[in-house]
Length: 221
Image (cartoon, rainbow, N blue to C red):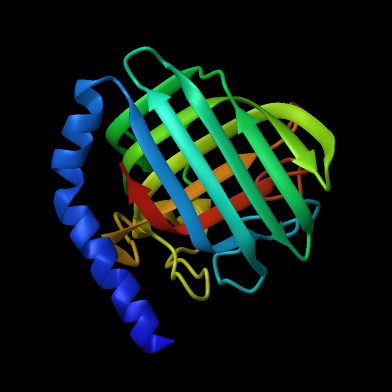
């Protein structure tokens, strides 16, 4: 396992070295084509009270894949994410976007390079190669579960790829963790979605339903 993880991190490091040129090529024809595969996991059961689980204790391991095709200049594209684990099978589809950004800092105490309302302090500030905000259809166990806001990030590796743990103690402590990531030379994909509803106290994030998927092997074409 340690050997395989070392190989994976080496490949991710090499991918990071060519990311700038690959990104430039992608942007030249107005498209970004990114795939995420396993290791894949869900952070917290979708109806639980904590779907960020910074200590890694509620990680649900499983199998999944995400296909990302984006045109940042045209603010268009598609995202199709799949995951299957102990909390059921998920499919999330996004085809409309309020905003697509590339090469920005997100989250942290200040929200990074975007409006803090769109990038709250739920993680340390993290360098993000590509991000989207917009509506999505969420299917659970083959049935439409809800339609609502979704947020994608392709970032530096902020969580431990095996345990899902992140060096962070929560939004109230964000100023103490500027740029605290697990591995700056590797990448991972985050994709979250929730119903359109008013915030509810007692949940993190403050929604009664929230699905939070992660993909650790990133291919950038």
